[in-house]
Image 1 (cartoon, helix red, strand yellow):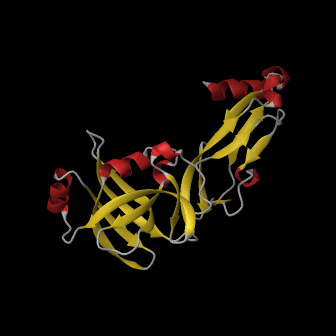
Image 2: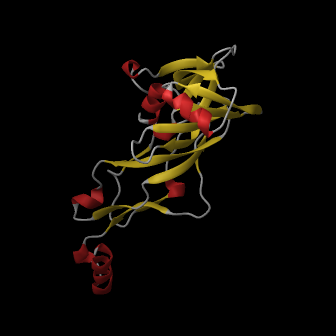
Image 3: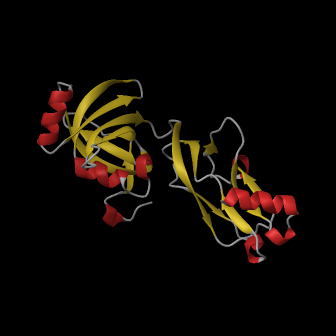
Length: 219
């Protein structure tokens, strides 16, 4: 979780503790590109809230808070606690479509998906390898093949990244997507199995044909 100084902390949203960034918003009664431009000129971010059986509605949100969340450790998977003026309770939401100006890189529009703490969501997170494998210590080479994976989870089980300690693995070891150790309530989403990483043997131990293939692959 984020440190308190980031403005993101454990909060009780709809009765469940979750790491969510609180943002304030106001209703937008009229939608459309010309209205959206006026909203941006007023220093606000045009956005939509939809999902969880609720009718889609247009809002204007604080751009600084949204930007800080999307640029934080959770990235596009940051949860937001959206308080809309005139509504009794905040809603829990995650950004599902983010539009950025091609030149200034300023936020132009965000679609927020309203979720419940136990809703199933799909997110893409980085795969981070840590440590130095046993195979590398004897001259092997670690090849990190897949750097991002799609996960199914809930807002309560959302993780920032998948971290894998490669320390114990010898040369010849291959970790596939199904081999990743994931927290309870989190599963990998895929149609066909694929490799996350492998530890290749030192070239001196490869056959001439295999060594030539490795040289060709590295070029």
